[in-house]
Length: 340
Image 1 (cartoon, one colour):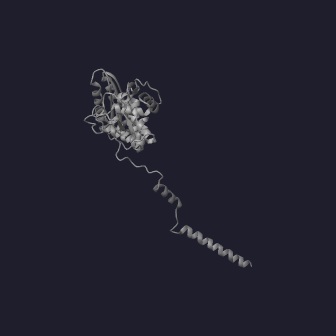
Image 2 (cartoon, one colour):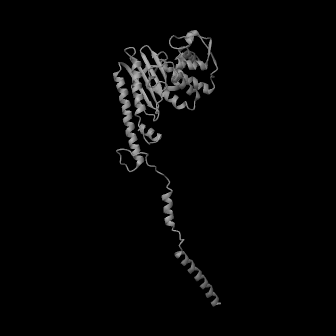
Image 3 (cartoon, rainbow, N blue to C red):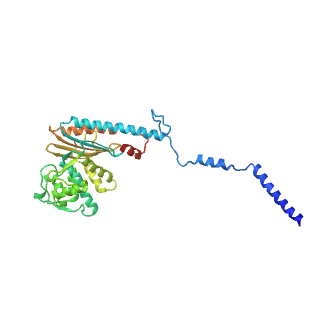
């Protein structure tokens, strides 16, 4: 029996010896430490792409950091140029002058006298049209609704198409278009009637867009408030067909002046406003980096307001079109840097 046990132990010993010998001397032995190292090197969690072109004058070790620094500096310098131009336009103007600029690529806003109030004139027709559009979207109003003309309530001298051939009624769609494209005063008043008349409509409009009250006998905007209206229109028009219609009406306006110059023709959606010596224009200019320009003036010499608006428009158009900072930074980086 003892001899049989010894024989079994011997077999076990020989098997173990064979396995040990095979493990240490086999040519197919796997180096698990080396395999783990290769996996980490060849399949990193984050791949950092180098910039397409070297950044001149920068020796940062991290390319992305260098891009961010350069972009921030370029944007700061660019916006300084914008601010200088609008400051000079205000200083050079004889009368009251207010400007608000918004870069729609970043949301950066710059102003001169941006909180100064001016009589709105016909610039109020844009938020009125937007308020009508919102009621259509809600199903309260419909574009084929017929609005009856009331001479005592609706008639007004001045700009427009209806005054030349007044009809008993008009579709809501027609009034909406005439209100913006022709700056039609009668169309505006007929739209006011949908909200209880001019005074009640103006109260609703200011509460709706600005959460404040207004003197309905002397309604006033600031250039910043007007710019904020256009920013809403621009940002929402892609998903709001009724806002897109308003934008299109602003582009095909019959008033080819002020923000619409030989440089911006066909590339600006705008709405002028004129009353006595109040000369305004607010609009969205379609460069490769679109921007809002809202200009309100109270001129001392007739004609100087429109001239000043056009001159400022051309200066900003050229700067925005030809010298906007180009970079490899993402839109989100540009937005963050602009707000810094």
